[in-house]
Length: 185
Image 1 (spheres, rainbow, N blue to C red):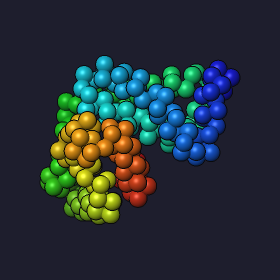
Image 2 (image 1 turned 30 degrees about the vertical axis):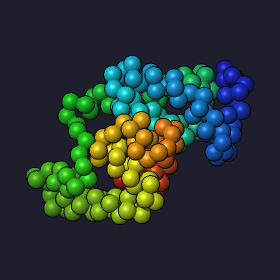
Image 3 (image 1 turned 60 degrees about the vertical axis):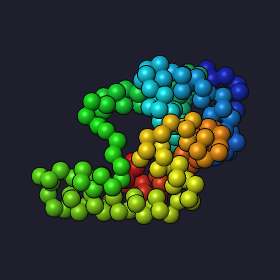
């Protein structure tokens, strides 16, 4: 990590030890820059919020892979750029669907029966994991992904700050990913 700024080097070392306060510091330090970058590339505040959250989730999960050949923020921009490119490629054919609609779309009709059974099982497991979430987390997840509300509007409805809503979404996604690693990988 020869090229990394000293304050980022300290932050990376703390992150590698699992220091949650270090992650909050990292998030506070770079979230606005990453979000603005995503907005400029995607043209959508809602999509940019999603990409920003995904980028910081990836940073948290992959911090051990950071080699320090560039500044930490450059590495985070690279992750964000890749997420944006993937999202743009998928835009044309993908659309968000409510969980209830997903069962019909989980497997094409031409799929083998075992693939359809796997898709139904995955959907059932995801529903169960969501039901086990605390009520506030379930509500925020529903508003964000089923109702497709902006973070700002969710914050208003839930009487919370936007950062609190973003943090809750982050924790919820991490919780679901840890409960269902085979579905979220």
